[in-house]
Length: 113
Length: 230
Image (cartoon, rainbow over all chains, first blue to last red; front, side, top):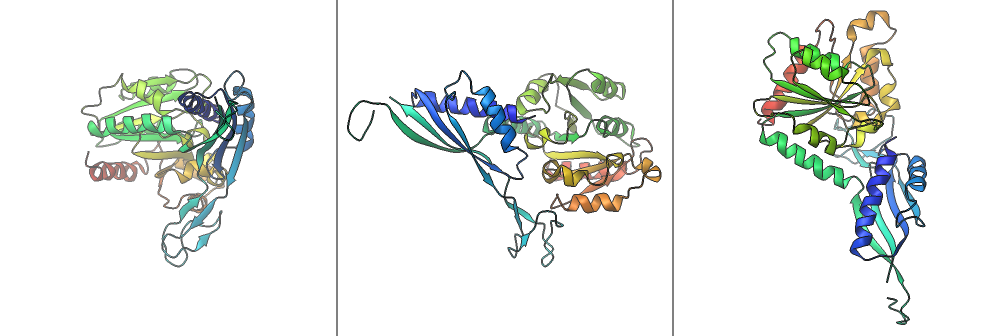
């Protein structure tokens, strides 16, 4: 379950940012996870609950914004539904993933003196 | 300090980051990639289920007729050194990355393993990932190419069930095709499933046992090496 290693990267990144701002606590983390990113938001939240103990994030809420998986033709812009052949029926161009592969730390709300 | 009234209470501030969560891994991967390029080596991240034929395909590549490519490999395994032992027996310099309970390789593990290899004079360096169709998919290791080994015995719907690893792949090795006569599956159905998760599908049906299809796969790798100007 790679969600544990993602949470460990998240806590390291947040810890570094908090130290840089001399934060005394972290209140909320906002992450954006795409539906096709290969990260399960529920498993990520569970792993976070377990790993945040004893860190600056011990009392911080993890807010997961989910992003839909969307494919389109790079030429004509036609939407290609998930599960279809990933090639535009009109232009024969390979489809492009427009959104859905995000694994992004967006914002940290921290308490500063 | 509170900016509104100057009361001296701590203040809650939003800090915008907007950075990939795996950016620390990405930085090490970038370093690995530069290292491979500097030594003129084409690096492959070979992924696939346990038992999909990753090691067997490498062994077959070593004994393929006219094989004059200099190949080395590192194998990720939760336990045992079996894969690296098999590769060394096939004449491929190889080492193991023992991951313990980790279900995938990351760029740092590969970086450490690279210290044990002399990359000069090599043509190909294969990073044989931990057998798993889920976790390895999202970690950049510094490879030039992502390759997924999918054996015909795993079933035609596996690309649809594990789309992320196939979407991020440059090629799929459809392995164990010598078993096709014994199974109710067809290469056409594998191709169809792959085309629904991989925008530019490139499938190489191969048999490590008979050597069938290896020539096309090896030719493609040679073309990739030439195009990468390595």
